[in-house]
Length: 481
Image (tube, rainbow, N blue to C red):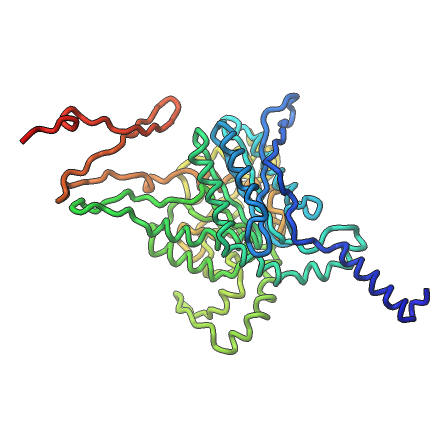
């Protein structure tokens, strides 16, 4: 074939298109019809299987709708069929990932976290069933094929930043993603016996999805008060409902304006320095959110800046442009930082246990200057979570060094998992200030306020049983007048 002829030129174009299309990731689901599966876990040094974890997939299309609502239904049914309390870990992945395990390592790394939890001694003793749910979307637009095709399609993969960010924003604003998260948590807390625990994790653009999907719900739960009957003294439990025990945002690729708005609200509505409701982790070594994100967003926001669309904020000690909050991620915006992870000690002595398990055994009820371990039992580093920065609220923004997370990803390996274990322990322990306080009730103009249920705490099992209050004899037969 003469490649200089029109026919030859057409052949080149066809070959190039076929080459590129071979690497395009279609807008499609990868787990249709699947119910959550079980995976056996055998702890190291054990000859027998100790337990299993379950993993389900729920996938969303480009507009944020379910690919198939049956994925949610099947996952909910699997939670109900578990028959015991569960440790629910729901994960939303980020850019350059999807639910196809051959495209990226994210699915396998999430599985490794579930396996580690399942084999952990503290989780084993708790009796909780580890149940993971992977919320998938088209974060990656180019398949992995082979080194040659991958090299050719690299530019298209990297140039997908704007389209994938727009897709994540659409998904975060849709009803299905919020419905899925809350349905899973509700099912775990209400439909399985025992003391279930719920963790939700978002990474990169997945953190953007999670933060925006839960923002309105957090506002509602923070500001809502139950109505009081006429004549009843207005008094209520000093309690803030958390949608999940731990909401964890890792290397968030969101504009920091969203976090600023939430932190401002927390500053005005909740008491300071309590247990965190949201924890955002950002690595010092994350150039994707620390360098690339500002470059990309400054290009798209400069016309707005020149047109005067951004106002000035008068912050303590300085003025700053709103432009900065649209071109920096929360973890790299010093105005939002609340904590930093600092090294305390290093050693090669025997800790007496693996750092991951030791962190799950941290002293409950402690939220300031918490210490934790990373590494191995015989080669470890001790860290302290220190308050650093102007943000003093329960919406934490925690900066961590390269040793914990070496870049933008992976996030479910080594020291980062050890840190997650400590944060889980820290966040899932209720504060004394969040427990109910006695209600002082006066008689109303419409008559006495009657109790409709009683709660009995069983000391041996810790189970709370709610039963209707039986009416007294005088209630059954009111006196005649």
